[in-house]
Image 1 (spheres, rainbow, N blue to C red):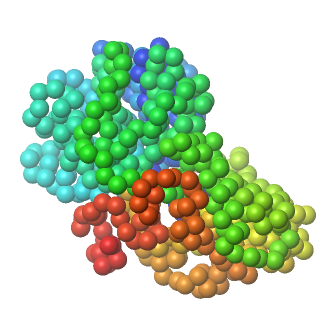
Image 2: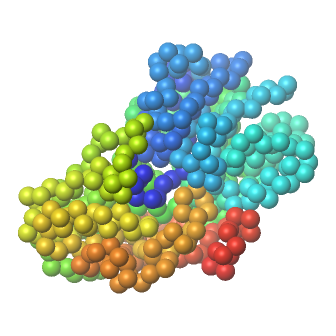
Image 3: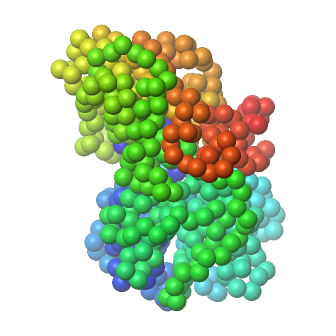
Length: 473
């Protein structure tokens, strides 16, 4: 996946289904649709109403599961997870769903996001005697649930969720029920669907399409859903706060065929590309996009500017994971294993290269060099989002400003570093106004922290490295 070489990765994707005879198998298909959200590990936990059964492993979905293994965990309810390691670190013990057994019953948890008060909560729980088996934030929730003094599991879970701060979309599985929760700011996407009489929940609606489920609605911030054989009941564990969904879901992370809160990702990206073309004017011969997430914006830029769109870069979809480590030379030029220029398209041409973001700048420099080595006379880089200047504490693997090229360089300095003939970013207002959200307030329901340094939640001291603290607003 191109995300692996671009230095910007989302933590994971979650999926859950209740009330279907083939819950585990459908979870497998759902994870396939969400594979772009994490390639380091995958897991499924199912229930047959008596026991929870787990199957998980490191690697891609197709590497972890086989038909025989899925048959062994057959059940009528299941939750699933694909993972990219950020705060929790790698290792099989951190692959979700996490399964916990006790004398009062078992529970499994899948979590997308990152808790900004995880260290504080862990310290508090350890002082009370808790022993953690993983380095994942998700385990904190299980300990809080078990230590809650409420009589019913629903009340225990709602009480535990109220202590969490940050980004969390959660699916919890018990023998007799499935529970769904989204943080009060709605930082991560989470959708609810229906497949016949079965209820389905997923990080993205593309997971519904692959199994034939119908989208019902988005899960609301602060909402707590209880799903049993009797149906679905919607409750709350917290009052909703100002909506702050991660803007990079629209810009980069989500699949273009997914809808987030009723907005199609492909259409939003096209509008961003059109807005880019309105904000700048570049004399060029051809527009091309960096596959795959930038293609929609490149098409929009082409339509608005009148400069023809061409397939100037091809993505090699068969590189994948390998047990054979490449040579140092190949590591340093890893982009060539993922991307190839179409020489006859770019040779002798002034090329506008549309990309969705620049994180560290190394990949952008290599792609510019690819195009120029293929004969492009000029390469103008246009980015369909503003400069990423601030770290993310909500589940994206950019936790320090030192690794962000835009935090330490001007646009002109960045242009020189990547070797482009020009470099232009989309304005913050242009991005917010063209994605299509209509939430009240100037941010229109977006989290803009990585662009502006203004965070929608309090950032706890243990979350921030000492030298970063003065930069967090």
